[in-house]
Each structure stands twice: as C-alpha cells, then as structure tokens.
Image (cartoon, rainbow over all chains, first blue to last red; front, side, top):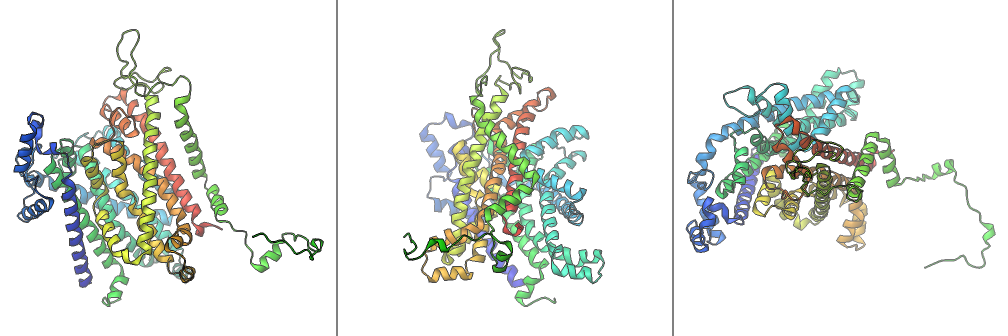
Length: 314
Length: 318
C-alpha cells in the first residue's frame, strides 16, 4: 500500500511538472495587451518592446521557464497588472481561497450523500416512480447545459423562495442556493453510476444464491451489493471533483461570490495575464491533486488492489 | 472468377430447398444480423423514437426555414416605419413571432440562424473528436511501444479540468468560430480515446487476431477490420453526445466573453443576450425562447445517443 501511494505521488508530481510547464509555455502565446493595462494604445511600438524587455518576456522560453520555477520556489506568482495594479497575485487570491474551498467541499459532500442515496433508492425500486423521477432528473441535468439550467435556478428559485439574488457573506440565506446549484451535477453523476452498478450487481449469481439461501434483503444490500458498488464509485470521485471545479467558475461568477472561480472569469475579461496564469496553474494543480486522492481512495476501498501487493488481512 | 456448372451436370436434378425452422435449429443456423437487431431494439424504446422524430422535424425545419416565404433576416435591424425608430424589445405578436431583441432584430429568425451555427459547430467538433479519438485510441491500445508516451499525453490533458483548457485556448487565440472549434477539440476526444484503447487491449489478443497476425495481416488492416467494428456503439454515442456538450460549452464560453462575435447569431449568443435583460420580467421571452429550442435539441440528442448505444450493444440483442 505504502509503495503504491509513493509511486502514485511520484507520478502526480511528474504530471504536475509537465502540466505547469505546458501551461506556462502556452501562456507565452497570450496577446501582449494583457501586460500593459489601459495605456496600451498610447505607447509607441518601441516603448512596448522596452516594457516587454523589462518584464523579461522577450527572453528565450527556457530562461523564462527557469525564472518562473525559481520564483515559484520562493512563493512568488507574479504581480497583477490590470485587476489591481502591482499587487502580488497571491495577495489577491489568498482571501478568496476559503470561499472556493467551502463551496467545493460542501457541494461535493452534498452530491455524495444525496447522489448515492438517490442511486440506491432508484436501484431498489427499479421501474417504480422513484426510478422514473430520478432518471428524469439525471437526463435533464446531463442533457441541458449547466450554463442554462443554473441561470434559471438563479432567476426563478431566488424569487420563488425569496432568497437574495447575489451572494452576501453576512447573509446566511444567500449561501444556500449556490451550494445546492454546485452539487446538482455531481449528484446526478453519483446517482447514475450508483444505480447502474447496483443493478449490475443485483443480477449476479452470488446475489441470487444469497437470496435463495434466505439471507435478509437488507443484509445482502449492505454486506454485498453496496460494498462492491463503492469501488467504482471511488473511481468516479476525481471526475466529480474536476466537475465541481468547473462548476465553481460559472456559479461563483453568476452569484458574485468572491472566490477564485469568479476571479478567473473577471481577469479573463480584463485580460490580466499574470492573474490568468496564476489561477490556471492553481486550478490545474487542484485537478491533479483531486485525481490523486481519488486513486488512493480507490486503493483503500478495493480489497483486490491490496491483495495484489500481498498486504492486508482479507 | 465466375464458376459455372459443368455441362455434364443436369440442372433439373437439383431443386431449391424450403426454409425449415426445425432443420435449421438442428444445424445451428442463425439469421442474426447485427444492424437489424440493433434497429429492432432501438424501435422498442418509445422515448427514443419520439426524440428521433422531434430531431428530424426540428433539423429539417432549421435548414428549410430561411427558404420559407415571409422570413426575416436574422441580422437586419427593423425600423418602425411610423416613427423611424428601432423596434426595440417588441413583445411576440403576429408580425414578430418571438418578438424582437434590444436593437430590433427578429428573434424568430435569429433563433433558427443561431441553431444552424451551433449545430454546425457541434457536428464539426463531433467529427474531429471522433477521428482523433479513434486514431489515438487505436494506436494507444494496439501499438505497445507507444503505450507509455501516449498514456503520459493522456494523463496531462486529463488532469487539467476541461473548463480550464477551454478557457485557456479561447483566451490565447482570438475569439471566433475557428477558435471555438479548436478549443473544444483539444479535450473532447479524450473519453473516446480511452474507451477505444481499453476495448482494443481486451480484444487484440483474442485468437482470431493472433491468427490474423500470423497470416501477415498489416496492423492497419487488423485495426480497421478486426477491432473497430466492435466499437460502433460507443462511437455513435460519442457523436450524439458531442452535440449537446458543444452547445453547452458554447453557452459557457459566450458567458465568459470568449464566444462568437455578437454579429453571428448562435444559441450561446442568444442565451447570453437574454441573460443580460432577464431582470425585467416582460423581456424574459428573449431568454426563454432560445432556451426552449436549445433544451429540446440537447435533450433529444442525449436520449437518442443513449438509446442507440443501448441498442447497438450486442448484449441487449435477444
């Protein structure tokens, strides 16, 4: 197990290194307006070249990459140019992290609990009303673009439940709808996978044997079906984390939540290159860490992975 | 080479046999046909049939609409002849079926024009994803020497959230039709490639492929003739689902401000225009009409794709 985790950590670090480098190099293709702010049009071409030179943007790409990693080691991600001029990027981002973490964690937890419950309910009552309503919900969430249904949730549910339209940190009511909105996609995903795996498992011979020897249904469900179904569910967790990250970008911007996702939209619209770069790197790293945790979780849940390594008591 | 019976054999000695079910049972004859069974299973799914009909009618109408009499231009700004003012935000009536938008353009015409644009993006992206996904997945699964390198490339792309890649591409390149297609193609093929690879790894070492290789069949021919036919169902599913997802990404990119220029109507543009004025209830029709058309299209494609994937899976054939 330890060996597997260490190997997987190494793999993640290599991936992280490649991703960060590739993203950084792609960023060199950005439109240069993003380094000047409002004054771009007033400058002569010579002044622009001089300014780029000063920022070290005309150096060969490997020099820039090396310098970037050196600064990164010192915890320096550059300074904002347009969003808040000459303020270090980290200083802008730091107060926003708690919001993103809260919404991400809360939404993932809600999606996990209610999604699994819905999936289990659907599989046990296959073909009944619960199953049909649940399927309708899954189809709707998967087929209709989230950019559309989230907009309608904001538009109609806020007035229906008389909740505030925009986020306000001092008003607890305004936290509810963004959290739920963010969990809808993941919930549908969990419900769909859980139902599919449970239905598959229920058709297997060992379950039929357990039933025919008179084991109570509850025991079969808990001891056999769910335990086995959790393995692929753990595999789905990283994908759910990735989709929560994506969702947060839209939802934070929609509800004006002062988190990192909304900030990314903001700085893209204002073309602030160092900010875009820092945020893209942060989001990519979160994605890699999410996938890593998912793999570790699966190793914990799946007894077969331990058996292969010759460890574990089962 | 055409063979004829030798002159000596008298054709009158032979007669055609009648089809006999009992006899065919004994020798294990089966008139199973893959595509016919697929079609039969598909036909049993009533929801999917309805979705198919809705799609056929809707798509036909989308492309016929500009040729119908009395249709307005999607980009013309209509001027009221009495007051010489732009006919802004006119509620739906007999003249403008879906009303006009904030600068007096006909929403009905814009919606159908936008649907054409969005479908075109979806189809182009779908085809590119399919080609790239199949080629990449087939090489990845079949050519062992490339396995390591291709896995690394997959890991790197798969580890970054799709949204981030999309934003990055759209931000680096100038917003526009081509940018949008390139950005969506960068990640769209990943899922298909992984699936193709896994399937090919499973079936590449079966006996018939071993036999083929021993007989000196080329890799290309083994991939195209022995392996790919197994993957038809997933490929079709991917194709059908890429249209709802491209439409979704387009709406998202437009919201961020990296979408198509406003002069090109698209579903993303229309939803975004509607969003800007959604706070006044009497103008909400400008958000609701495009959303309805968009939702009908995406839901139908989604249902159709899933139903076809189920139907084309031989395990579901009786």
